[in-house]
Length: 579
View 1 (cartoon, rainbow, N blue to C red):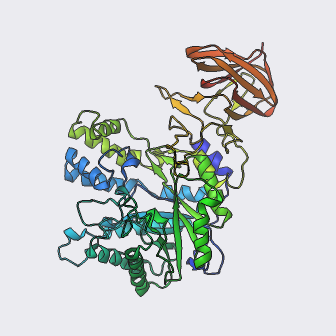
View 2: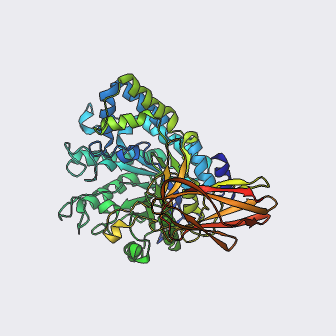
């Protein structure tokens, strides 16, 4: 993986670090102090200071809120060891190595989702009602992250992701307990939220490395209009506008320079009744998930920018395929809109870094989701501490170079690139089917399903890679016992391209390992010359040779594997010198 990472980094443009300058809203643009426009490119650090169940394979645990996850852990190992686990989690999930790599990829910003309880106590736990207790460890962690981003010339954007009481009915994103008063049901929760922002602004007022204050993540609440409890049909949202106004006033008491970011109701997208906004140094954030990447999908926010003369920022997006990532980023950058994708890492494959948990984690998940026996306290503790001290650390994550390439290179350069060194020498060589080229659909591969558009289509969610492993393209990849990877569900009309390097060239026989229950025909096209391979029906793997040797040229060669009338799986190819 280190070799693959270096190969990717070599072909990417890194933004040069420079002396940082305060960002500000200048009409419809985000600019630095010299008036130069700044296009933000970055990631949100989801899962670090605020856990969500789906990032840990725990979406079925209640509603996936962190307080439920913590309670489940404490029920197994006790409160003292649970506190030890969360301390290790905060220490290891994001470290300077993560930020350094983001900068090398070419990103210039980081969005930090903050859980309020790292900074202050919940209102019901305050020793004196109406008086805020401040927790220095949380502020210190922000200071440390800021030092890391500054060292890389990157902007840090503070995002209050979980406000006191919780800001909506999407419970996990704000760690909301519906048995307690929400942000909107408690004046004291709103007072504390305002106080948090005043405290943050006071601390960072003179810090140009802070790019903006994203004051409230994804509010989703019905104030007057029934719309599914998420504010999508609200036409007023007066309480939300009032809170934004009060937060802005508190910030400006101590900080006149930093740009604010506000988000609409309905997960950041319904601005009805929120504009105009009195603070002119403010950008509008919108969030984009699972919809089409066409002009119509952003027409509404473009109209907001034009009408109110305010800059736009795609503050959160992701959880989709490489095709979707590339198209979304190309779309918004075409309109001079920066972005922060979500998240940098999780237990899951469609992000730059994938956490691979130790084997004990599956047993814990099985127990918590009612599918397995209760582990012992010692076994659970060992598993949890292995996860928090080892598995989540950057150097132990799986780096998905294809995801990063789709975000940063492919929106501007659609050419294919080798995903791994595929070398054939005079003695021959082997190629794994999963190591097809990196690049856009239609260039590096073609597949029937390559993204999830269910919000636009109204149809069921599409799983582009059925195996949810290794690559984030439409190509379906499965993993056998023993960690062997292969292309599965390879259907007629689909194909993959491979960039081969032959040392000296020559004539080779080609063996393809494949299987198909019904049988069918594969096509192997080498440097434009097609060969047909018939695969007999059968349930097991078969090693089959092309009917004639192929000629490899010295240096670069292009091979395309296609499914002509084949519905099955392919493991790879082997080249042997022709006799």
